[in-house]
Image (cartoon, rainbow, N blue to C red):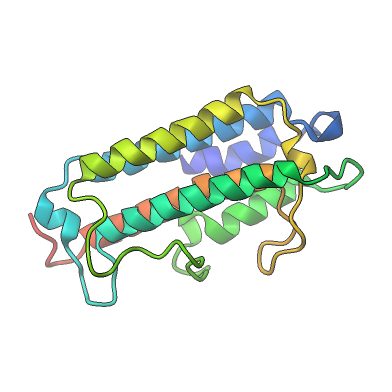
Length: 208
């Protein structure tokens, strides 16, 4: 998947997007593939976990896999609202943005390859529960997450909205983010925390 993220980005975004902020077909395909691959990889890491593995915490201040998945669902909901909500604001068709560099910048900040070096705070409202477990089994989490992620994939695959023309004001660390970039962020965020799940599994005391 890293080949998809790094080498393909420059190929996919080498051509300018359509006029009026619409995605090019290459941009649409890239994002559909990224959302699909990160969903698949996440589910592969959690679907066969036992109850002990699901709830295991390497340390008191380290999230269990169940808590990581809680955060992932909260973030998916928040990012969906953010990226779709931007489409209600007036589009900025005249904004000139190098999408190659902006996509690469988002990946450099949030994707799994820089998880240990690019520290970002947990967004307010996406923290996992600490006193109880949201889902007792991975199967319950997968069902709920899949419903929303698949809806997001369907939206990107079919929409004719000008995602590249709807922007937030400048955001610290991330810069200017449009609806398309927030969806890139969404996929990269799940890849980031899938890597965190692997770190939890790598602890010496992780249950067999």
